[in-house]
Image (tube, rainbow, N blue to C red; front, side):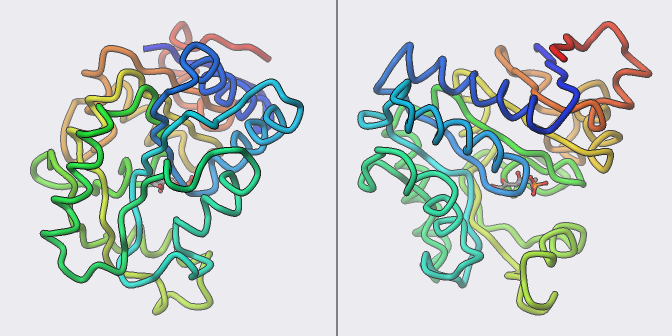
Length: 253
Ligand code: F6R
């Protein structure tokens, strides 16, 4: 595992974007596993900028997103499909037919999970899978649980996640209560995992995930068992790790 630390959100976003850019340059037909949330917005900005400046093309790439809320469609401004269009897809030359995201409007959970599992498998898993980190250690929407769930699953969101996401909705009541998410198998089969985190709110959980016991109660801890993980974080998110494991971080500030 490599842990890169930048002083600011801007610096960590640029570093994380450069990991994805290197992948696309190495293989223009890469499968990019993507995430939503506030953390990757900056890195998507860098990818869009580098596309604009003609350093990068995504024309032959395919993408596979981690998750989608249930019960809201791609035109809802809080759906992850909408988020991806707004923050990345509309700003680069990716072909819409090469993008994949669970269908939150499919009421048949078993069918949707099976469909998306097949999508991930048929793509041959991601070359690089981007992950944010939930306040409770979730990755994708794999919430703390008694066991790791391998396949795409229909997950009931925890109160902590609903509270964290309420900031994006008019009221807490409007936050969807469940989601479809890629499971641990899809994430662990990615050839490379890129975990991003910023802000002091992530400092404790980032340390727990990367240095604590591997347990489904902290879903991100499973990444300790992955062969190629790159972490890009800012100084605030690394504050606990920097204290407890000062040699673990490669600072690029
Ligand atoms: C989003 C996702 C979530 C977020 C996590 C962190 O696709 O899978 O696991 O990455 O909740 O969210 P932010 O970045 O908003 O702190």
